[in-house]
Amino acid sequence: MKINKVGIVSIICALFVISVALGLMLSSMGNKIHSKGLKVTDHEKITIYIFRGDGCPHCEEAIKYFKTVEDEYKDFIQYVTYETWNSEANHDFLGLVAKRFGEEKYGVPFIVIGDKHYVGYRTGSGIGMINYALEQYKNDDYKDIVKEIIETNNPSGIESKTLKEIEG
Image (tube, rainbow, N blue to C red; front, side, top):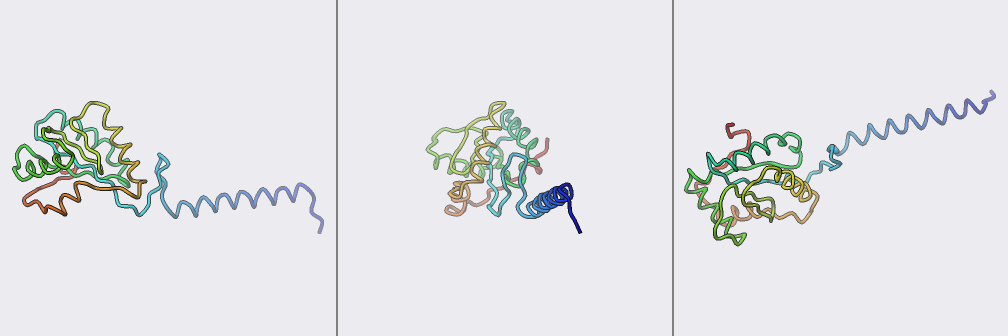
């Protein structure tokens, strides 16, 4: 049997296409890659803690923004909120957290991501917080200060809600 150049090139092209397709299929079965190029791993999700007050317009704006991106980043980020205006336990807990960051006076929203905190919220500032959280997801040295405070101080009576549990 005699194979000509066209036949050889066709076989090589077919093998190349099959190997590329097989490689893509196998890689999609492994770690999921997010649209931003971030690979989903077994790393714990980064928690964005939002200390807020019911009726606070800046808090509502922050919550509204985070709700719009919650599904997009659900593989990397989770949200925990503490309402501090109507809960003495949550207010005292915020005091512990703020003190850890060296804040004597503080307001809401008080947002904590890892070992960084933000006081207040301005339109457009949420994307910077999300980007910081995504960077922390890649960081093996990620340190969750709020989680450490909970484990160390065991504050009683604190109540949290997810974004989905907040009306509005």
